[in-house]
Image 1 (tube, protein in one colour):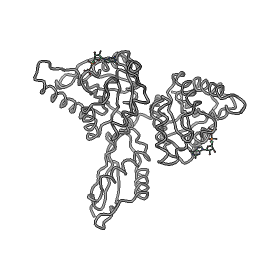
Image 2 (cartoon, protein in one colour; image 1 turned 90 degrees about the horizontal axis):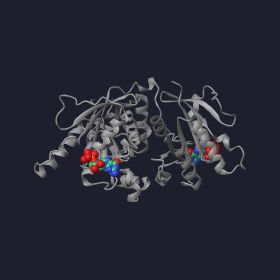
Image 3 (cartoon, protein in one colour; image 1 turned 90 degrees about the vertical axis):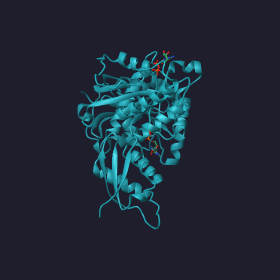
Image 4 (spheres, helix red, strand yellow; image 1 turned 135 degrees about the vertical axis):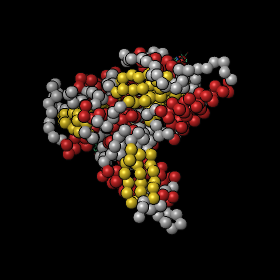
Length: 439
Ligand code: GDP
Ligand code: GDP
């Protein structure tokens, strides 16, 4: 399998070359000749966490400052279309999404290639607020980076890698079966979605014997990943006592979640978030499962006056406690967006399955604790004796400390957020366990 190629595009001065240098960094091994490339683009081999790829800087295309912006944009898009497996679109947080950025977004969408939106020069967390603005570009979640200060690069590359086919060796950390539960309120389109998934991939449909009557499990294969779809819509029991049905369906949902690696929480575009959804999302978090929020019936969006940016904002507001869950828009009816939702499930699964080296973990924890020291309680301070990753799915980190009761909830949350950031667990909830270290 040839190495995937990643093309960096964006307006002049947003930091494309800086990002390019960051990616090739110390590993700038060989200068690669991509056929058809000219002198004004640089393509180099790069590697990120064992994934090898070619990265192409289009900075050179700006050679003639007299060239009108739209021509440059078109040229970049053309190049991206010819050569890219994935595109990194770089913007500048200080400028906000400019009209030129809008044009580029439009061009990039037309290429049909996966695009990851990077908001560069986000040098500190205060600036991170500003990145929300970039949802307006309609390219999904903006990723805050600082190419210059090396912030967010892991997040960015995680997102990029998730969009391109992986080489065999990159799959070593994910094996086995991905159990995917499709949950949501009645009538949101769970069954339709299941059918759309199965219709898209040629599959062996079979009802696994021995499963409970709570849900129907269907094996399938998507992008070489074996999956087990856990459908909670399969069984309805009309004619039973109403109250009983409701309780039963919630229980059934919770049990499906418990058996899953990743959960599709399906919402209805026409009737977004209800209390029950928040309740189920809460359970997904407590059970440390991967989550993708799927907004179905998106074919009705125009009629309903909805747009992706507005919807994303509403979801981020309502599900404040899970900023890491990717959101995807589908129409089970028209079979659109379904592959995108499945890609997101794979991306989340890989993230939850990731192991970090002990060295990386230890230094990340030390940095986090140095930056924001735990406050003392009754004159005693939380002290770290050791830390280890003791599991995946969920990524589980055990902190051996002098006295676990000194680890306050807010401090645990701080540590989780910091580790998610520095260890690039963009899409998953981390399980942090505090234990008293034996003397
Ligand atoms: P290009 O024209 O898109 O290739 O942009 P360059 O990589 O040449 O960067 C343009 C300017 O932005 C340079 O002065 C960089 O030092 C600066 N720059 C790049 N990345 C960052 C960043 O993350 N933060 C800040 N503050 N400046 C940056
Ligand atoms: P479930 O109860 O969650 O399994 O929902 P169903 O799959 O039975 O769908 C409920 C209703 O919504 C049916 O009438 C479907 O035809 C309709 N529906 C499902 N998906 C879509 C969609 O993407 N767009 C539209 N417009 N209708 C849909």
